[in-house]
Structure formats: structure tokens, C-alpha cells
Image (cartoon, rainbow, N blue to C red; front, side, top):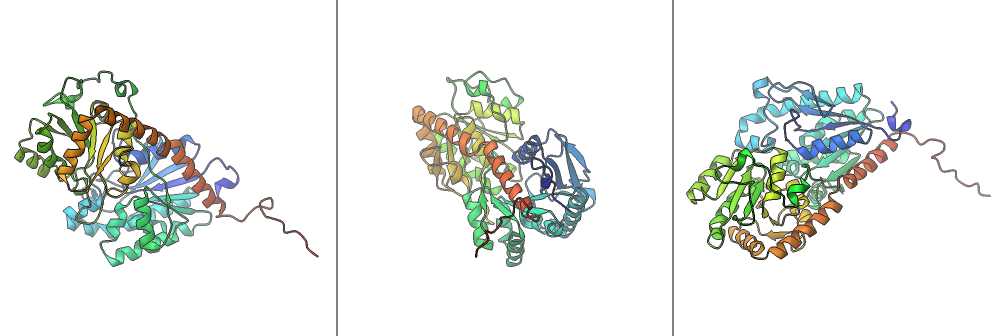
Length: 438
């Protein structure tokens, strides 16, 4: 089998193997991944997504891209992925470990069938534990090459046992190319397998409403209750924002514990968007701290609503931690989105966050699990609006450069093409002719 790049260097057949992908046009699961797929298609490549089924969901299309859903259990049990993510679900409900074998086997068959039937040039595997196992058979197909993208969560999951670490290390050594979303993730790859990973971050996945970002009055939203979140004006108390899955490593409890310290000196409001199995626990904590009038758990919001909240807020706060399994933020795409909205950021100095937030340049970094440090940083920005605005502008410029989608996709195309060229013998024109010596 010859790679398509031979005859059409501008077009490749790419299969993207993932654990989670949008289940409908309005689903906001891993939006940065969906954005990357759309951009590959816009560049002329033929892309197919391979993802696990969710409660029996079959093959479908998103953004005119075919999504092949592989089955691995009766529909009622197909819930290992999506939402909070497999690592968190396995921690919450260990009985789901019984699904891991059929999950891998289903993925192996789906990846093999897709790569063979569609004559795939590049199999791009996200979260290579356990998805690297699914790529081992397709890697043997002539002309097919495998690229792994690591996000840190899979590395933390593999670190839970020696056997899992050995499996992931083996898979990484079989890859034709490896990427990592941050220096933190790249170091984990190196430590585990001895392999080098090219650092390529992910860009913002929501569109910036430039009118609202410039200070225009945002439209009213249904999430404005019990206090008006999106009708914010300079005369009202400042708005703090957090957005993400409500899981342990997000550390929202430390932000809640910082709120009374902030409120002693300044009236503020906090909006927390997203959902997860820690939500009820953190809502109870908020009630126990008597924050009912200052904190709003808004649940999942649309991209448009989130963009409005970014435009509305005064500071974005991201109190991530290393959780009980050793996992933390591999990058934190939401931080990039905050920077794209020119917002000052307060974030924990953990994991890949330090690739996004440069202390004193694009935001403020604080020690993890430290409510006092969070409160001090927030108050520092609130009391120094010119400094906060300068951080926001510097962060915006940094995001436009380093997290620029065109730059990101250019790097992936270079990797793809290098892999494809290595999959075939060089043409006569490409061979170097050794000079004749006498």
C-alpha cells in the first residue's frame, strides 16, 4: 500500500483515535480536539474520528467529519468515557475496570478496520494509555504511521501500576512520533519511556466576542440567576470566574476557601461553570462557608455563554492541584481562552500551567492548595487595575503567538509529512547520487 502523500502532497488520510469526542453538534466535550479536526479538514485532509460508543451511540458525523463509534459493552454500560473522563470514573466506580478489556479489544478492531478500509496514512492517537494498544496492529500496515499525543492524564493513570507503566512505555517506543501538550507532559514521557516528545500545545476552542471583550454590554443569559452575571458593569462588584470539570485536580475547594478572605476586604462574586462528581461536595462547602450570595454554580454552559462570562469577569482563577492519584493539569486550555479574552489570571504553579501562565508576565502563579495565596493574588489584581490590565494584554499577545492555531497545525502537518515520507522508499529524484571517486 502506498501513502496518498506520494501522489498528492497536500492531502493525507488521517484517522484520529480518541477516548472522547463530541456526541452531537451541540456537545462541548474536548472542544479543542474538535477544533483541531476541523482545521485539518480545512487544510484539505480527509479525516476520520475513531471514538468509543456512549450508551449505544452509533456512527455519525460532526462538522461533516465521520465519527466511527466502537462498541465495547451493552449500551447501558457504555459510560467509561466522556463527562468526567475515564480516570475519574474508574476512581469513583472501580467496577468499571471490568470494561477495560472489552474497551481495548473494541478499539483494536475499530482502528485496524478503519486504517485498512480507508487506507489511512496517519493514525493520530490521543491519550496513548490505553489507546496505544489499539494502534499496535494498524502500525504494521504498509504505509501507515502512528503519532501519539500525550496530555498527562494518561501518564498519571499508567503510573498507578508497574504493569501499566510498562505497557505505556512499550507503546511509546513503537510510535513514529510523539507530541506533548506542555513541557511538564514531555518530561513525564521522557521519564517513563526515554522517548522525546515534541511540545505542541493546544489553542483556544471558543470564539472571542470582540464586541463584548471590548467592553460592550453583554446580552442577558439564563445563567444570570441568582445574581446578574452577564449584566456586569463597572459599578457592580468584580466577578471572578472558574471553568472546568468539577473533579479533584481542579482544586475548586481551595478557591471557595479563599472567598471569605477576599470578601473581608472587597465584595466580589464567583461563577463556577462545569460539572462533575465533586459538585455536590463543593456546593455543600460553599453553603458551609455562607457563600450562597456570592458564589454561583452554573453547571455546563455553551461556548457563547462562556465567552460572555470571560468578557464579563474581572479575573479568571484556576486553583488546580496534584490530586490523590498524582494527576494535574497537562496544559489547561481554558487558561489560553482566558488570555485570548485579555483577562488577568491567577493559577496554581503545577503541571503544564506554567507553560501558559508566566508569573508576573501573563498572570500570577500561586502555590497549590493555598487559599491564602489565592486570596492575596486576587486582591493584588483587584487593587491594582492597571497592573491587572497590563497582565491581560501581555497574556493576550502571548496567546496570539504561542497558542496560535495556524502555528499549531503547521507543526502537526510537518510531523505528519515526515512520518509519511519515512513510510515509503525514496524516489529516484530524492536519492542522493554519490560522486564517483578515483
